[in-house]
Image 1 (spheres, one colour):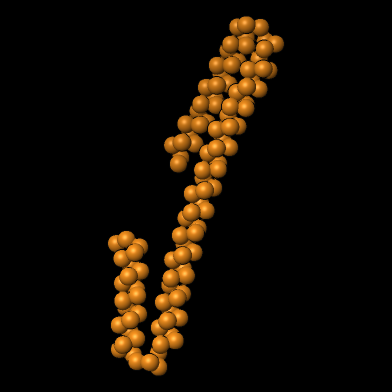
Image 2 (tube, one colour; image 1 turned 45 degrees about the horizontal axis):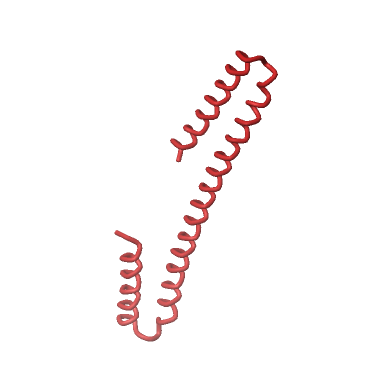
Length: 106
């Protein structure tokens, strides 16, 4: 069941409870409904913040990978042509493995 349907049922149940219980219980019924709605809104906010944080982590990993790759290539320059090539390939394979592991974990 989707959230709007659940909320619609909650409001319907609160209205039914109000009509069954009478005016004496208005405050308690409305208070209970308000608490449920507030909890649902808070849960939505948490989901949005979690998603934004995951996206930020992904961007940091991507940009960090590029930065480390450039640094490894620059550092490998003094190893000679064969050493630099091997060091560069190993560095980029490690960076790719980290990015793939992060992507699969998501």
